Length: 287
Picture 1 (tube, rainbow, N blue to C red):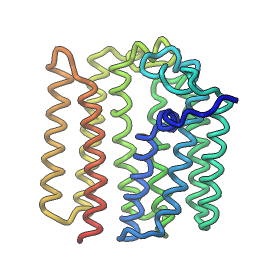
Picture 2: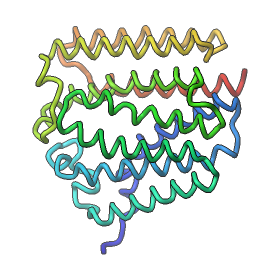
Picture 3: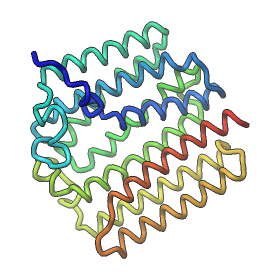
Picture 4: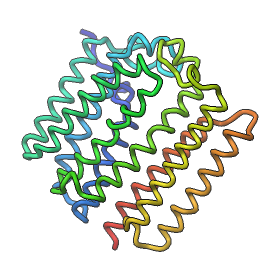
């Protein structure tokens, strides 16, 4: 078997996505416990390893589709930099390590949720998105479950109101986030055999749908504010100002720009999520 080129490891595990999953679990831990503790290292490491394994497994599952898209054909598995067998061995080691770490800390609820999330993402969602343009809606649950993993690991109940609100925010946010990729790379998705929203709606209708979801995403962040996540006036003002700014940006780009900058909107959404989660953590650490 060929030696494993370590430089492509971050690409295989899609490090940005795996870290964002872990960040959402970390934010949930901090909100549930009210502090940062060395005790969080063990469950967060397990969550991170499971996320890495799921991302790597997805590359194996979608190898044939990824080869057909310029955006993804350079990934380790479809490009041939890494064989499927090599990738599968890495997937096994990552997921096995994640399971062992969570089990060793007796984080049973977190572990069960992690296994369910892998089944949902790599099983149901990966299967569904080859058949339905709306697959991202149920698929967004895979980004919500890590919130409950971090929350339960900190000793919180899955029915706690703050956990539900935070999960709802992440659920709503993910959908327009993915649809922006579909707007930018719709032709590539179609050529790879994925159903796309513009097969169902015309471009203007699809833009209206995305903007409506963006209103929902910003509204849910305000719901967090009104529900007591942010206690400082400056934090509330920042979130309100950012909401107005992001809605203004999306409105201009979707309806008035001759050549909409979908990548700019995508990056803005990522930055918005990062800031919201960061403020949640900071407010709990410095009440």
